[in-house]
Image (cartoon, rainbow, N blue to C red; front, side, top):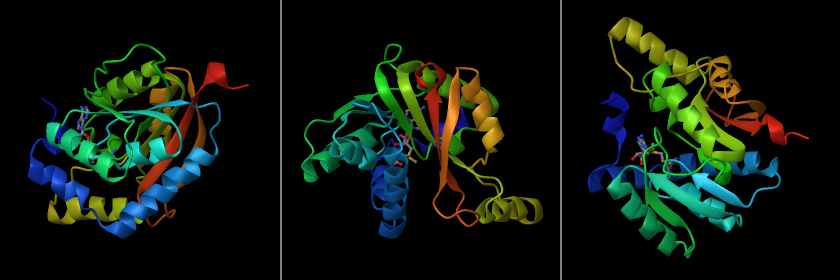
Length: 214
Ligand SMILES: C[S@@+](CC[C@H](N)C(=O)[O-])C[C@H]1O[C@@H](n2cnc3c(N)ncnc32)[C@H](O)[C@@H]1O
């Protein structure tokens, strides 16, 4: 079993820890996603994959999209349900499922959103498999976050590994590498946003199905 699955929020403790992330960081990530959503059109259905404890499923539902959240962690799903209720969002569908084999038919969702997951994938085989699944179930867009290897945090992690042997479970991937996976499924890069370029490692890329580009 691939090691990234260690990160699955199977226990309540792990999901609770993720649920109580630093408010400033959480808000900055919400703003980043809102910026990316502004550039999209023709969306009514969204898959939040993985949904974790539900913060972006809530955002998508509040934006007016018919939203489904999928995750492999039972504890994450349970907390997502509670969080949706607390936010007054009652129409999100939450389901258990594996990103490596999504339980949905071809083109089931106008947009598929994958945030804070890609950098956990350990190798090209898993990355390629998951991107294949995201593209298969997406009709128009896939929004995906990845870690930029040129950002200061990524450089710091590489130096720590090299000089202090400190291992990191976060894998940075170049935009070219990410684009390569999507190109195989005829999805083209149409956006690439940073929280704060150079400083922060997280990027949010938008890929659009070539057939849908007018
Ligand atoms: C870091 S959290 C991100 C959650 C959410 N996107 C967010 O930004 O708040 C990662 C989530 O991925 C889930 N996960 C890990 N591997 C998965 C897989 N193969 N299929 C579905 N979910 C998975 C975990 O259970 C966890 O809830």
